[in-house]
Amino acid sequence: MSFETLSTRTVYENPWLTVREDAIRRPDGSEGIHAVVDKNHGAVIVPWDGDRFTLVGQVKYPIGQFRWEFPQGAIDDADATPEETARAELQEETGLRAGSLERLGTLAYAPGVMSQHFDAFLATDLVAGEAAPEETEVGMTSRAVTPAEFDAMIERGEIIDAATLGVLHLLRMSGVDPWA
Image (cartoon, rainbow, N blue to C red; front, side):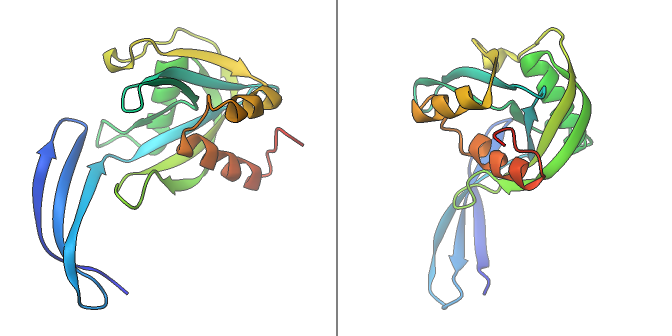
């Protein structure tokens, strides 16, 4: 069962993303339109020191609220590997450098409207350093939390990022379960 793209047009574009509208034919033969946000492949990193996760927090403009999540970002350099992007995002957002970086899997951010996927990584053997957030990450801060504190933050609605929560399942499937 596949969709046929009849035509496509760019509706909006900036350096980080493109919004396009596709005229489509569905598998049943009916026609319609579908809006798609195209964004570069990304990385989500689980910094784990054996006792605590490191999270980053900032005001998320679209929802107008401060929220916590695992460090993450999109690949800006077309030649960068997902691992290089993960290492760069981790250091940029937290100042941490990972001695070990293990790929956990690939997920999609919001496949109903967005083409962007991301690779998830477990970062261990962490070395502290200076964070250097991008100018678009004004007010970003980081903190280390235990698994119990992480759960409490979810219960209080402080962590609502679907990528962060989805990566936890990949982490558990990898055999690393901080809650065990």
